[in-house]
Image (cartoon, rainbow, N blue to C red; front, side):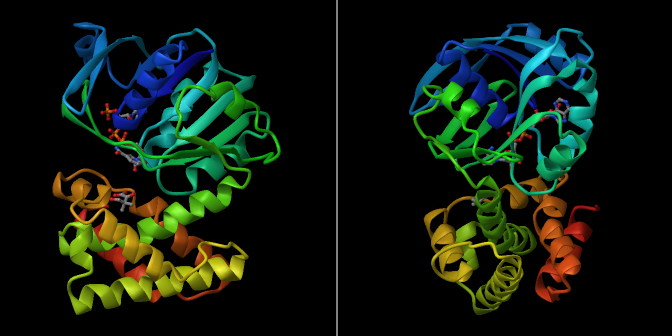
Length: 300
Ligand SMILES: NC(=O)C1=CN([C@@H]2O[C@H](COP(=O)(O)OP(=O)(O)OC[C@H]3O[C@@H](n4cnc5c(N)ncnc54)[C@H](OP(=O)(O)O)[C@@H]3O)[C@@H](O)[C@H]2O)C=CC1
Ligand SMILES: CC(C)(CO)C(=O)C(=O)O
């Protein structure tokens, strides 16, 4: 298969490496001519894991090339999906398979609704990776990735085609629920770590932070139960507590985005939850408060 990767950041390059290793052809679609020129100085990127470095030669191009796209992996941040997809739309045909792998919800459903002719897949991952230099990736942790088809949940063809690419890849017959579970955890942890400017584990150490987290979780539980979504076998607060403890030393992605003055994914995490709650007529004051506060922090 020939995969085009739109969003050649940490997760995009991690997947480029997985696909190349499994023998697939990969083309990176970069956003600017400057970035393309910088990449083409070597035409390769590296991944370091456990002190071992591996290099991957991969072709790269801009969105306005005209070769058709058969398999498209979108790994931008959630807020960039719509613009990124629009930039390659002319290269997409009815047979194109699209896999979106990002945190948050909304962009996946929007793409599915606007393009019923496409086979749209979505995924959620607990992999971890970051850059120490441009195109030099550090693999921080090996996680699981769940993917499933958004429009037709019985079809697992793309998953079958991706067998062998990642041993930690799992098929999700109900990918919407998987996305909701990740969203719920992100609602519980990300905004508060950004607002308190703390590591995930430091949310559990203070009464006020724990109380805020509990209130956020209670509201998310109310919204998801009203929608008939089964999150976890126990209350979200208990699940989120364990995740915050397990990832105690980590800085959440939102805390890092705020610290580095980058746009955050708040609109597709807490923002999405609040929009769905409004449609269902459910009040979510704690989530709305942190939504406004993070918008204020990041100047959004
Ligand atoms: N990194 C991680 O460990 C994990 C990340 N995730 C999630 O995965 C998603 C991706 O995260 P991550 O890889 O870290 O993010 P990065 O910021 O590293 O990568 C995003 C990439 O998308 C590119 N991009 C943005 N807009 C466009 C466009 N219009 N055309 C082409 N490329 C574009 C950016 O390019 P440019 O640099 O030029 O702006 C950047 O290279 C997020 O939703 C994140 O929350 C989930 C689990 C773990
Ligand atoms: C689970 C958590 C909170 C881990 O840091 C995460 O997904 C993120 O930082 O975005």
